[in-house]
Length: 595
Image: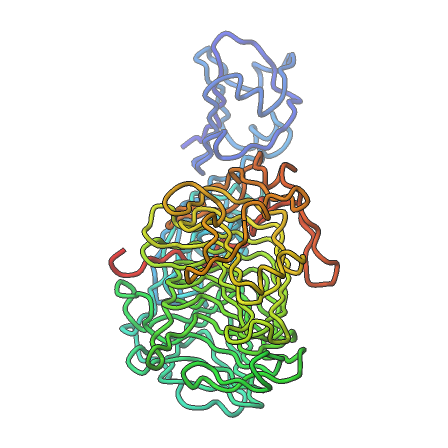
């Protein structure tokens, strides 16, 4: 049977084809499906692809033009002789078919395409902006992708490789790996003390049974993509003792996840303990302090103490009552030193505080707290570290403050005084919920340098400075909040960004006017809409500012952080870069049972 290469164009137009400029197209512009036919629906598209028309005296001798609007090429060689070379029209890429094989692997298959010499398989963890090639020049029509994160959505697409080059990527298919859960097999049990170096690999999952201590001299290394479950029945908790180390060095596409042992549809706050790290950096409660609920000793004189690495780590549904009246924080940094690396960490739906610093000097970048029942971020007992790029989003069903910031409750003048330096933070309350109290509660002798904040949606004000010691520090400049946007906060049910009744937290007059203080022109604070994309969404939140937001257009001056090797110089207010959403891909928005 004769194969035809048809070029359809408007009837009656006379043109020549010899010497036409060749222009490569993509599958959307021409239907090349491997059956030997190239079809152009109209003459304008034909010209757009192959160049302008030109006179060709040999037109009729080369082709069968019968006036029916079709140019027929009896074989591919004649087609090439007219256009000077192969058309370069790449085959359309197929849509893959996905089959979940396990909690860590997905099988991808697709239909064969004529003239293909191979196929590339591209993958994207859902939420990340870009695809990456996970297999190149596959000669068959199937591939199994392994080493994935359990319970995670992945997008796949195929690129066809042919003599004309790679095609445009095909349509996207999505599948979710099987959640690990306790029903998917027997976990490896972690219990008691880890006294020598140990590696947790991502091809297994692990159960924390009771309090598990990484003892002095031991290092627990956790591979990217590993899941660790806290056993609710035994208050499963991971505790790094003084001198121990945890190396949890995940990746954006393979975060390390600590979560509840409940089934996915039954998870909720307070179902296991959490993560506690004890270091040897200074605290102001004595040379050595005792952690809540017998979680170990901490404190000392080594400000550069190193307790390991937390990078791309999630801690979910933790905060169980470890002992009477002692609910655990999602992550407690207790006397942790600046040699410890903390970045890209999320605490999600914790029963007590999300992240709390008990003294120490540890620094932290890219922190994210969501759905925390108590305070999203908390510090006390002389924390003097640094922070940048933090975000908190509260749920109004049960939440306290964005920041709860103290020095020492019994002795507000204890030294070293809590005095962190923090730049670029976004704190989002829930204006529609009965809870979600104060954005910034600064009290009990804390000093601090806070710059480039966005504080929105809280129901007891965006800023409250309490107790005489912190008020004195605010008046002297040792406690300062500048270059910050306050918006859509309420006080006593009416719009208001600042404490207005001059009452201390316990009802004692504090004789301090937060509004007048925060509105001092030299502080460069503003009460304007920061125009964030979707800050209150709990399913698809987006904390990036719009392009004309006062957080990016110069309306609110941006403070430059110290040039000390830790901070990043930026040109925006808030915790998320408008051009780089660092939260994408590795964080979770999973809702607890009943919500």
